[in-house]
Picture 1 (cartoon, helix red, strand yellow):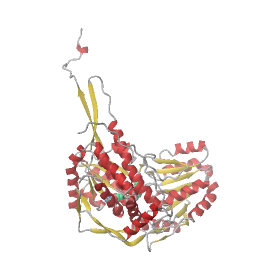
Picture 2 (cartoon, rainbow, N blue to C red; picture 1 turned 180 degrees about the vertical axis):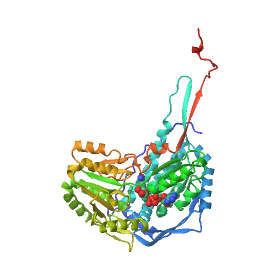
Picture 3 (cartoon, rainbow, N blue to C red; picture 1 turned 60 degrees about the vertical axis):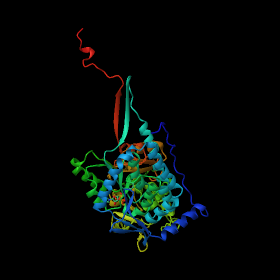
Picture 4 (cartoon, rainbow, N blue to C red; picture 1 turned 30 degrees about the horizontal axis):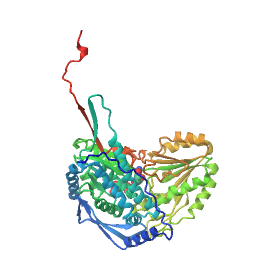
Length: 542
Ligand code: NAD
C-alpha cells in the first residue's frame, strides 16, 4: 500500500546504434555472432516459471546457412498447453492485484536490459535465426521492442488517468480491470519486436498470457523470455509454449476462459481463428477480444510529377530490405509510362550496388528468406512470371544450395490483376504495372480495389493538388499511408501501425488503441448522501 500518485518516466525512442567500421559496438556484436554461431541453444517451454522439456524436439537453423543448427526446442503438446492455461489462470489474481507502478517497472526494466546488457545477444539471435542484417536487427529487436515496452507503459498510464465527470454529492470512478480469463498471443517470425509486444501488451494491463512463438523465431524469442524473467516477471504471467499452431487452435482457443487473442501473421491463419472462436462462442465465459494484424499487398503509386530519384530509392528499400518479409514491404508499384524508363534505369543502378548473403558479413544488404516453404513459394511466383505472357521478369533469381537466397526481383505485369500484383508473396519481389499517364483515376481505382488488403501504401508526386487528390482517392487502401516516402519503417509513438480490410483489425500496436482491447472497465458510482424519496416532486398536483 503506497500513498503516492506516480508518473511513469516519459517514453522515448531508443537511439539506433550505427555499427560503423572500427567501432567498439561493431566488434562486440561480431564477437557475439561468433559465440552464438558456435553453440546450439537448448530451448525448453516455460510454464508457470518452470522449464519443461518434451520428447518432441525441433531444430532451428540459420536461413542463410540451412545446415547450421543454432537451437533445439521442445514442442508443447496437448498436456503442456493445458498446463500452461492452468499456470496462467493460477497467476492471474496476484498479477492483476499488483500495483501498476510495479507492473510498469518490470517492463521498463526489460527495455533497459534489452538495450544494454543484452543488446548484442538479442541482435545476434535475430540476425542468425531470422536472417536479418545488422541494421534490420537493430531497428527491430533492440529499438522497436524497447519502444513498445516504454510507450505501452506511458499509454497505460494515459488510459488509467481517464476518469468520468462527477456531479455534486457523487464520485464516479472507472477502474481498468484486465479481461476475465487468459489471453493467447501467437506471434510471427519476422519481427522480434512484434513477438515481444503481443504477449507483453496484455500482460502490462494485468492479464496473464500464453505465448506461442513462431517456430522460425524461437531462438531470439526464448532469449527475450529469459530477459523478461530476469527483470522479475512473476511465474505464470507469460507462459512460453513453442507448439504447432493447429494444436493451439484445437486445445487452447476453445477453452471457456479464453478471453483474448493477440495475433500477427497471415490473413489465412487469423481468419481460421475467427472461425474457431465463432464456432465455440457459446462455450466462452465472455466474448473473446480478437486482435490481429495480418497480411498486406503494399503499394507505391507514382504520379508523373514524382521525384524519380526518391521514388527509385523507395522502391529498392521498400521492396527488398529484410528480403521483402515485412508486412509493410512494397510489393506492387504503379508507375506512369512517361517516367518508367528513367525509373527503371535508376532502380537497376541501385540494385546493382547491393549484395545478398550471410548477415554476419555486414556489407550485405539482404540475407535469406526464412525457410524452405517461403523459398518455394517465392520461387513459384518467379517461375510462373518467367513462363507467363502477362509478365516479364526484368531481374531476379534464386539459389538454395547454401541458404534460402532470393535475389531482388522485379516483375513488370502487363495486366493489373496479374497474380503477383494482387497476392501477398512475402519475399523480395516487386511487381510494377506501368499505366498510361492519362488514366490516373482509373489506375487509382485499380489500386484501391484489386487486392483485399489495406495495410500500407505510398504515393510519390510533387504537385500538391495531385497529392491531395491521390490521398483522398486512396483513403481506404492503407492504415499507414506515406507521401514521398517508402511504405515501411513505422516507428512506435510516431506512426501507429496497423491496417484494415483483410490486413487486420487495425488496433495500432504500441498505441492506446491496442491497450484498450486488453481491459474491461468497471464504472464505480458512489453517492455520499443517498436519497430516501421514492416519489418525484413533479408528481404533486399542487
Ligand atoms: P503465419 O500466419 O504463417 O504464422 C504466424 C503464427 O501463427 C506462427 O506462430 C504460426 O506458427 C502460427 N500458426 C500457423 N498456423 C496456425 C493455426 N492453424 N492456428 C494457430 N496458429 C497458427 O505468419 P508468418 O509467416 O509468421 O508471418 C508472415 C505473415 O505475417 C505475413 O502475412 C505478414 O504480412 C504478416 N505480418 C503482419 C504484420 C502486421 O502488422 N500487419 C506484421 C508482421 C507480419
